[in-house]
Image: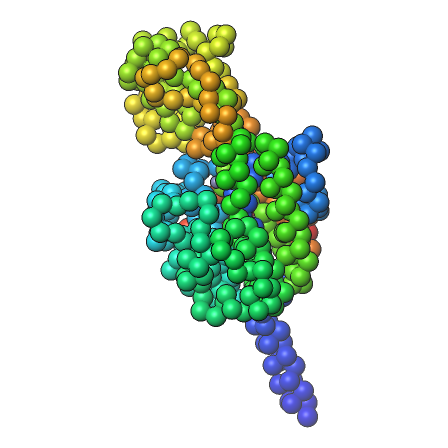
Length: 403
Ligand SMILES: [Zn+2]
């Protein structure tokens, strides 16, 4: 009997050690264009976003210094691999059939036999996951994608199962409400270990009406309400990350340095103005801080070269004032009115241009972090799941933020 008891307790011990760890579930919500100011300045902007406010208040949050290019496909892949776009190879949303060339979070989770779900996540058309409805288009990528086009690429049977639980899922166009209805179903009925969902309406609105515009705030409030509904069925012990691809700025003015100093060799990269000769550099230095030049300050070249590899021929670099966007154009005024639309694709260190990181759940401390690099997100998410991303070399935030 004693031997039997010993065997039984050994079996119990082994099965406890190998049982799926209910403590290790993760939901990642990527909100396209969620500038960090939406969270940091929520009071000043009078934002009615109770769900995001609660997640940020109860969890860890930080402004994020991004990577170039800051296209949602490039950064969406960085967030799940921990390497820069130049290393994972997804440099933008030029074609829907791109894949990361390095291991992703869902691949690492699948390798550990964890249940994975992907909703509209970038670069996932051929991804292997238990549930997948990828962002997919034909021809040019546009704001409104036909629902049937996306559903034709979803995991077989998935659309029918979601629609039978939530008939509002199927509609003519795929939008945030579609993605978040799908999320609600997955959390409630399928309980994935890892769920990644990407929503895009906020980014699209800002491209039309400007960064943090009144219309954009309304879109975010709507997203917040739908996220709140979706996570009301959150499986126990799920940690929630909210991330975004880039900050946003409104192009109120255009600065044309080639016109300002009459030189055709000046370059503009990531919103920075680069001089390639001493005479151009000196001419631009004279404009720093000058009334209506829009040129804010000279930026140290070593700082620039870390962020913009093709700035190697520059002898000096200059940043512009907030809401002044530099252009290589040779025609028009030196400084003239802009489009008043929302823009991004700036170098990561541009002031007031930060994306968002929030991590909340029963294993996460309430802590406001200093700014972090986007490269630190993936290793942190991997730690939560207990999986490995061997190429993600930046330090995980997990030791700092876990309870
Ligand atoms: Zn975006």
